[in-house]
Length: 82
Image 1 (cartoon, helix red, strand yellow):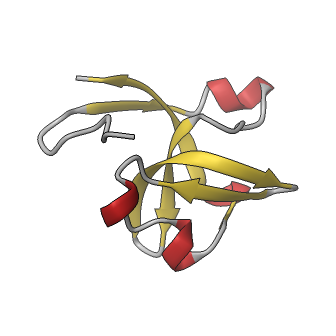
Image 2 (cartoon, one colour; image 1 turned 120 degrees about the vertical axis):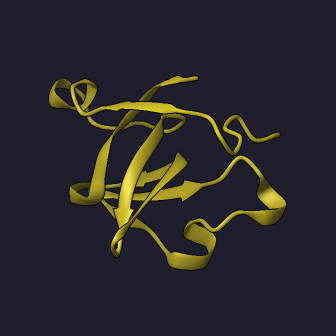
Image 3 (cartoon, one colour; image 1 turned 180 degrees about the horizontal axis):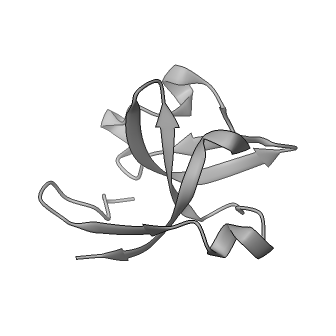
């Protein structure tokens, strides 16, 4: 899959979609890992943990390297890419 977001894109993230529904497989989300914010696609959901992958399979810093992410670290859903 080719990357959907390129360097220089502006991204609008909202936490509102996750007030009523939990994040699901296929959603593109922003999340905190340490003191940085990343954007990745949800590949797998296990209770309140999410396995996240990047669209650039060959060169992505994602759950294959840092493990799953807890729900509390998910900031919101990407709703627009400019």
